[in-house]
Image (tube, rainbow, N blue to C red):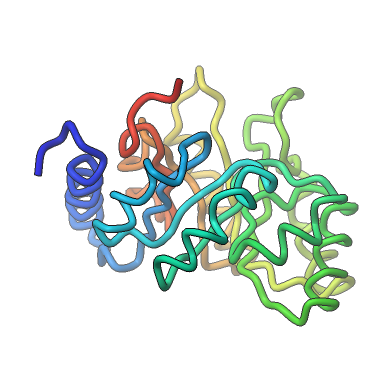
Length: 223
């Protein structure tokens, strides 16, 4: 198996995750690798599935709907994560299709997801996206508003909030944001942390990430 193939790169990422967890005094089983398959076709995803990967991330509901129902008929045990922004009019399809949603970031979305979970009698793993850098162009709850938003989701909407997610600013040291999100999760008694991508997942694991989102380092460059 060579690093020139997706299965080879997947194997290398898994090894780096194990080493990063060991260096941080963590069990590697505490961290889930999400292979970000957005923009890649089913034919490009199958070799990664064949190599044993089962958790995958998609950015858009419509794109995921076009390829994952068929792949789920071919492979068992797939866990599908929505890691891109969710519109309230896509909540029905998102709840039906995905197992985890990482991007709950405003009341309207939370309400739509809560209504669909009740209607479809489903239970998903849900993350609140936090805009740790308070970037005006980026989605996510502002840090100062996160505690009250999580409380609203839990008590008013009965949403099963499991953790927090962030995407650090590209021009800042990610460790600062990972440490901040980890501290916030502890204060809110949330166990899961979705943070870290191809360039910084090892740093994220050092700060307690339970889910890392790795795409190009597995699948290669997107066209």
